[in-house]
Image (cartoon, rainbow, N blue to C red; front, side, top):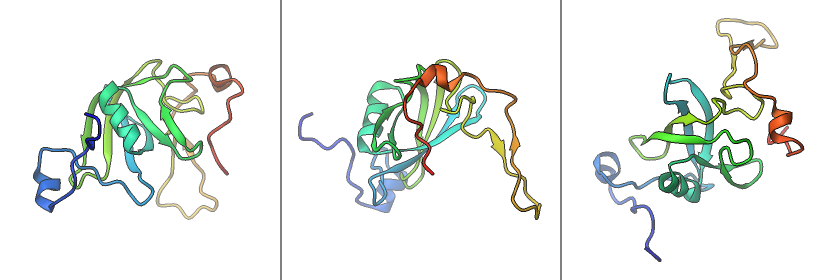
Amino acid sequence: MAGQKPFAPRETVEQVEEGNILAPKFDANGLLPVVTTDAGNGDVLMMGVMNEEALLRTIRTGEAHYWSRSRRCLWHKGATSGLVQKVVEMRIDDDQDAVWLRVAVDGGASCHVGYRSCFYRAVPTGTEDSPVELNFTETGKAFDPKEVYGDAPNPTQL
């Protein structure tokens, strides 16, 4: 409805923690962290953030939308690559300040680097090595980023 706020105001702890109405708590920058996992096997695919518009579009379309901090714009995952994340289930945590998406991905990959998951390296623990050497957990890329993205700017910021 025009003029109506899409989410409930946060009025009491009980309402936020035990209520059945969505009342998300965005951070000082207007963002919510989002963990996205593969609905089939539970693998973590990526971590992103949503602003109010991204959350609302994800709810309304059933496809993942995020706020791109590097590009500073709304981002419909897969709009450029075709690797659309279809939401199988969306959950909000107990105090409604974090989202978990379980998705099915057209094309099977979610990382702009070409790997299936953005979490394609493991950090060893129990080591005093310096610098810490990462271990690749994926044996190869799921797609060639140059073919998929062409000349689009890389979102990774130094």
